[in-house]
Amino acid sequence: MIQINDNDFVAILTGAGISAESGIQTFRSSDGLWENHRVDDVATPEGFHRDPILVWRFYKERYQHSLRAEPNPGHYALVDLENRMKDNFFLITQNVDGLHTKAGSKRMVEMHGRLSTCFCTKCHKNYNLKDIDLQPEIPLCLSCKKHLRPDIVWFGEMPYYMDQIYEAVAKCTIFITVGTSGHVYPAAYFLSMARQKGAKTIGVNLDEPLNSHDMDYFYQGKAGEILPELVDS
Ligand code: OAD
Figure (cartoon, rainbow, N blue to C red):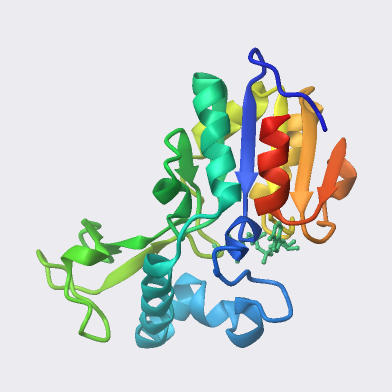
């Protein structure tokens, strides 16, 4: 296995695959979320505008499920790596399930938002879902009483923390991508960007992702098994 040294700067991108062993559905597998739900209906601003009740139902269910899920050895391996690398570590996740936070990751950004928060479509006030009444089919802002929406970055919207992400991708010496199919941009582009800037690139995935040609090392298998080995090495 590739060696990670103390003077490396490690940037990591995770996707749905790292949470699969925690019982969270991925998106593009045969039993994935996008098999049973149309992306246009539940993951675009237009879909929310058309049918906010359907969209809220979808995200409330995923939120309730995420509350019951526990991190797996893949999440914990990244906490171990962070504890060792300290400020030479940056974790970017596309996941909205909160499991990296639950495992203890700190130097981490959730670029596609999170299931546990929402914001007002009018005044933009942000709320934790545990602090609002989820009984109404469309939850309402406590201040202005307008519709709240899930704090998820939908297709056609700008992901969060892009400045910090580009900075970390540009300066890393090792870039690791875990459990992501390489279908969704800009995240799928970070791997080739890091490689162009001189980083060694590593992929850990169950199936070969679309951008595997940009990986110097590809470890095929489950993140919960491979990441602890990689970090130990
Ligand atoms: P995908 O469902 O597209 O891909 C998940 C990847 O994880 C696949 O390549 C699987 O082979 C792999 N995988 C499954 N189980 C694994 C395991 N135990 N260990 C390692 N790998 C495993 O999910 P993402 O690439 O994360 O965006 O999808 C990217 C974005 O598309 C999501 O953030 C979401 C979605 O639309 C939004 O909702 C904004």
